[in-house]
Length: 168
Image 1 (cartoon, rainbow, N blue to C red):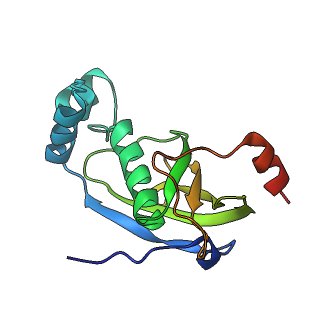
Image 2: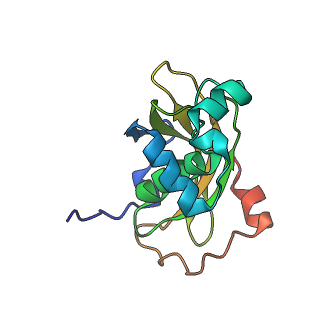
């Protein structure tokens, strides 16, 4: 069992690159399991002849919701127990197909000091082995201050007035 180290706002700097997460090759079996978990049984995700011959796709598609889950988990793991993923905006711009290995990556693009916690702005996404970006994304993660209070549960989003004042 691994122990997570709590990440504080003061530990983060603009330009920090998050340790990438690599999925390994995603097989049709992985996609079938995700179809079952998400109850999305569209044949383009597991039926190769249907995906290729009927829908003219390059192969069974990796579910968009699975890619969303990879991004959300990547942020959650980075935020560690004390942080909170507040917002995640994902754009689906390219398909990923069974047999691909994906890399989830991220970098810190901004820091905002709010009264109760710090807000970290991130750019992240998913790339395949050919470095094709399929899901460019933006996120905001709330982190506690080192000598501050823990973030509330459930998380209370920042006041819009505080967000405007924190932009500098």
